[in-house]
Image (cartoon, rainbow, N blue to C red; front, side, top):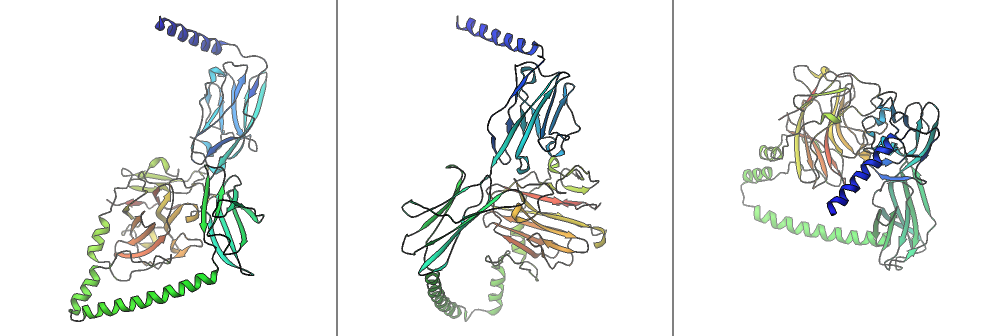
Length: 485
């Protein structure tokens, strides 16, 4: 009996869908859309709802989705029973679709891999020969910014000035001060600024007495689930300096005592064995961790250390789907070459790897110049890593702030790393670049493989996502770059 009931329900549902699909188009119709904004997150997929009333088969009609300020270049155009390739906005190509079911009167737009540029107002426009209707849908995006940075300075009168700042938020976040009991401290000194991408930075300052609380917390939030918090002990700056000086003196005394003991132990050692021992224990990536300036290694790298680094070598291949339209990927994903640039492609001229890394150590080598061509043959290139959520449009600069850490070459300008402003590195001749990513130490190092010497190390290479190797053969440069096995 239950199976008979289920069969009747299925037949009734099929009959209802058929009636809806065969129902003729009315002369007049309206569109139903949400009253409030649609909320999404960066790199997510989102659906902008739009449905006809009354419901009927929309397949013979024209459906157009466009930004309110750009009606002539729609994000999606459905016409003559199919989605048209032109004219459409190239920023949405390959990322939009109609998935609601046109035969049921649903013309909702699905948008994949949402970017910051996608925020704003969209227009759902449906028309036939006799009537048209349109409605607006607003897409909003929550972007969680950086953890608050707290600092303490003297405020005069025995008080201290505690400053809190955070960046990269959307929409406008709320900044809250609290003491150790969790009680909110009212404060009116809050300042918001906006960057070129429309992301907001927030800063605030607070005067307090060092004895008022064991610690202070600063929380920046969009909601209870989307918030960042940092804490600080509001001691006087002078107290910190005194503690630092005492600690420094004690450390120097301890260092002197240890040095004396070491000298006594090594006094009768053979000097040659001593130098050999120091050479064998030399760390390949000996760079001062408190500085981001280059640490060139003029002498060759110890052979044992070099073999150790190559032990982290990865089999990297390029992901052709991420390549700029002017770049051709060949040799089973090992070679990238500039061919011809398309005016509609607004992305940076590079290609990402298939592999991504979030922990441990990884090494790969890239041939950036063909020795048979000579220095004059290669016009430009860059290699390095990118966050897997980094914005790739050319309106965003390729800098660490936007998720890129690279070493680059440009004819007439030489070799640079993409600090802000760019830093020139003293490299004379370079044909093969060694790239070493240490996720655990949050560093990225570049090496001259031919001379086995260090070029530059980035520190504080941090992301909550993963890193992807990035490769660019340059623009208007016919010479390829190749990942070596």
